[in-house]
Length: 167
Image (cartoon, rainbow, N blue to C red; front, side, top):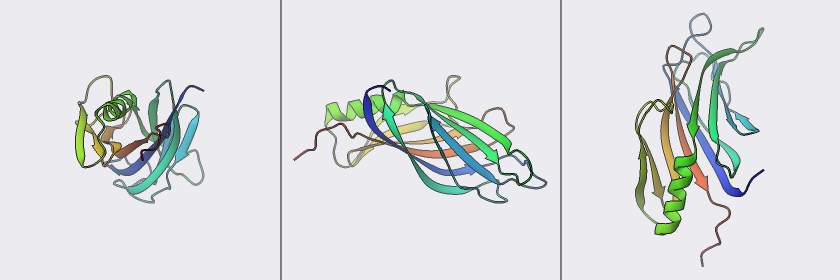
């Protein structure tokens, strides 16, 4: 593995307009991957607009990777159905964290960067990266790919565990 950068906390907030994979609904869950690390949310039964509010943690190293999401419908007697996937480059939040260190923000809320949807990302709308009381946070809606509809909301926080404690 590469140089340690810290801890990445990914809050899987909610989904909206997810696709039907069972008779009238779906039982969705999300798998989040960063490199060889993987974490999974709980299953929300019979819901196309689920609210998870689950925080998943990953160790974060150089080189900076891509956060991958896969959404599935839980099935009891057969393989789980795919409900779409999305990815998010983590380079912008790492760059914003470095900017925060240079500028020395430690209190209040300051927008460090905005990212717009494009062909190279799965953003459903503009995403902002902010410094909130010294922590670098990105709020994002990701559009699911290879599926008719569906979006997932994430809140991502980069915790720098390499910085020397202030005092």
